[in-house]
Length: 417
Image (cartoon, rainbow, N blue to C red):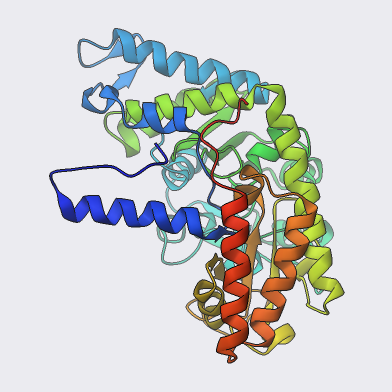
C-alpha cells in the first residue's frame, strides 16, 4: 500500500501519490500521527466499505451482517485483552465522537465537567468553549503549575469548589506520567465520575511503559491511530456494566449511524499487532527515543515544557529558546522536510493560531526504525535550523541531511519482520 496508485480520476491520483512522496521524504514528528502497517491499510480499503449495518453484533437493523459481526467481535475481544477490560465499544468514528458519547453516558446536559485547559495540554473535547463539550456542558479547567506539572492538591482544591459531575484526565500535550490513582481519589472525594482519555498514550499503556487507568477510571476513551498505530478511529472502554449499556446507546443511535466496518477491521488488525511481543519493544523504544530527543534539546539550551518527558512527546518553548513563534518554527522546519505542529504552552501570550511552542512526537519515526542516535542527530538539525532560520545555505544543507535520513529509514510495510 506504500506505493503509487493509478486511478481514472487523475486529480485524486495525483493528490494521493504526492502525499505518498511527502510522507516518504519527510520526517514525521506530529505526535498524533503514525504509520499503519500494510495489512491495516489493506483491510481499511477493503470490500467492507460497501457494508452497512446499524446496531451491534447479533443485533443489527440490517441483514447480511454475519461477516462484519465476526470482524467487530474480533476487534472487541482483542481490545479487551490488550487493556484487560470487561467492555469495549469499537464503533466510534473518531476520538472526538468517542469522547462525546462517553461524556453523555455519564453527565446530563448542562452538567459540570472539569478537564485540563487547552494551553496546558488538554483537548478541545475536554471542555473548550467552541467545542460541543463547552457548549452542551458547564465546563471548568485546571492548569499545570508553574513547573508545567500536574499539581494534584491544586486540582483537588478546584474540584471541591466546582463539584463537577465528571473529571477528565489524559491529554494531548502533557509529557509527564499521569497518576490515575490520585485522580480517582479526587473524583471520589467530590462525588464525580473519572474519565481517562488515553488517545495519545494508549500504545504506551499497552506496551507496559505507562501506568494504566483501568483500575481507576469509570470510563476510558482513546483513538486507535496514534501510539496504537492502527486505522483512524475511536474506542470506549469500561468495567462497569451500567455505564457500558449507556455508552452503547450513546454511540448508536446517540451520536452515530452505521459503523464503518472497514475502519473496524483496520482496528482489529492493529490490535492483533499490539498483542504481539514486538509491540512491547516498540513502546519501550518510543519512550527511550523521546527522553533522548528531549535531553539533547536541553543540552543545546532549549526549554522543554514540564522539564522533560516520560512518554512519546514533549513541547519546546521556541519563543523563549529561539525567539521564534510556534507558527514560524513549524514553517521553517517544513522547508527542510521536518513536519511538526505549533502548540500552545502554559500561560501562552500568543494565540492558538500562532503559539509559543512546537510539539514533537517520536512514535512515527520510531516506527521507521529511529533509535537514540538518529533522534539526537535530528535534534541537532532542528536546533541549527531554528538558530539559522534566515540562512538559506545552511537550511539547504540541513534538508540534505533530512533526505538522507528518510532514505536510510523508509516506511515499513510490516512490523512482523
